[in-house]
Amino acid sequence: MKKPLFINCLLLTAVILISAQQTDSPMLSGPYLGQKPPGMTPEIFAPGIISTNMNEAKIAISPDGNEIFYRVMNYNHSFYAIVFMKQENGVWSKAEVAPFSGKYHDGEPFFSVDGKQLFFNSNRPLAGQKEPKDNDIWVVERTGSGWSAPANLGPLINSEKSDVNPALSQNRTLYFASNRDGGKGGNDIYMSKILNGKYTQPENLGDAINTAYTESGPYIAPDENYIIFNRYGGDTGSGLHISFRKKDGSWCQAINMGKTINTENAGSHGFVSPDSQYLFFTSERNPYFPCPDHPLTYDEIVNIFNSPLNGSYNIHWISAKIIEELRPKE
Image 1 (tube, rainbow, N blue to C red):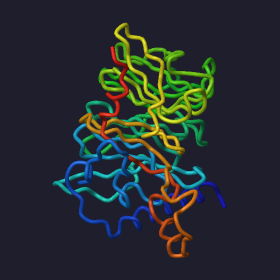
Image 2: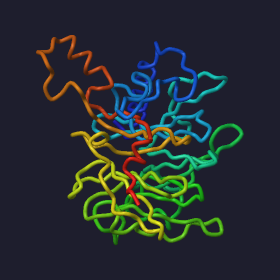
Image 3: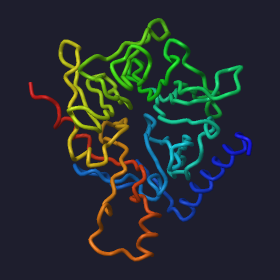
Image 4: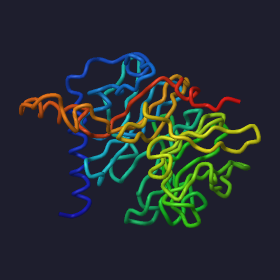
């Protein structure tokens, strides 16, 4: 089977699965799809609607709260795409593949603060080339009819290695993860400021953030007061970590966000809602395993496998007050 046909089959399967999940979905309206807000205990976000029996990760919400983008992927992570839901006239649409996604490996969407741009990473080929490449960071611009064609951020940001997980502050400073040469470990987190409309040479965030292990998935507060990111391995354990900005502009030593977020299945891809009320994150936590409280019947097993909490990645949310609880006392 030729590769393009195979990818198209994967895409068709993903679209069918998304549609099947939402065939009987209720009409949704209101902020956050009308879901009941969480407290200080993480809850799965929009079960059966956004968080399904597939793998969902890395949510992005537009500044006005009317668009939600996120990544879906198959079980061996060999194909993933960006999908979205949109609220119009007070009613949320069903999930659809984003108009710029569905052919290549696209993920990790992130809105600019004004909502006019959406950044993401993709292995799509550069202009004039045919074959997919390593992951680069791309951007689409909002137009009167939707979104522009994706534009690559160029060789200053996109190295010969993998460059992923874009996040932007209010002043458009770009934070991202890369395994480019010269780093401290697997992936490190870098930042690039905007100067005269152009990105500056990316800077490694240094020892307070990066280690010999892997750091990725940054979320930067709009005012750059704190940064949340994934870390895999090391003395502080795997999962979401946070670092706060000191008065002198340097970063505090990053700390693990704790067992509330990082269960035995480490959390990843943190994102704080535009209204600063909720922390969203990705987790594959599962209350049924490794040992249920009774022998399961076949029907119970099928129901578990078809539920969001089947061990797949899902999107969770919790009150953003947890961030202030972790802030160092001065």
